[in-house]
Image (cartoon, rainbow, N blue to C red; front, side, top):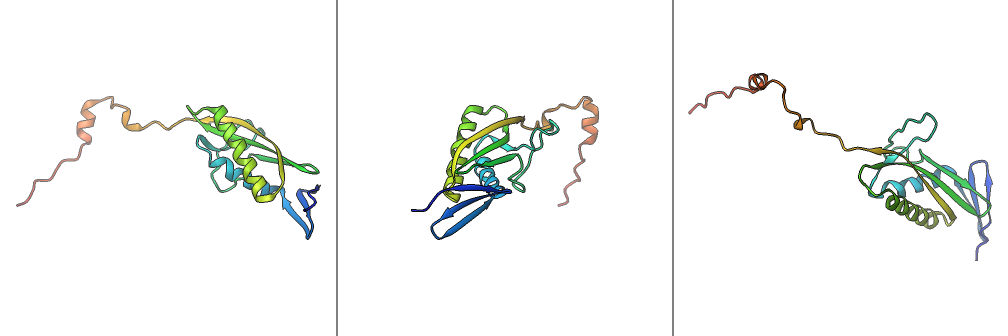
Length: 153
């Protein structure tokens, strides 16, 4: 069986196998974790982090944003900053993220994930429809309606 010693070299994880070594950049592991996290129902997006205290929603373009990967000698730890949708059960979402990320990283890389820390950075509210607002002046509403042209037979 393969020797599973891991080491950190700059920003990479190296797994020694019997036929050679496999090297993973930390960003690869972060992208795998990001893909697994955004697929969980209730996750509105990834957060940019704590730097400015401003939450930035990120689409699928940069899935490693908001994810920090720490590689030890034989294990990997992942920190994920997310934004959740309002009204969703946060503990359930966090647990689903943890399980999904662990499974994805371990399956795709063979590295042992020892912890997945989920940091909720914000809540996304559903946008309100402008149709619900009633016009203040009923006369203006009548003037704004288009006039129908007479039908030609």
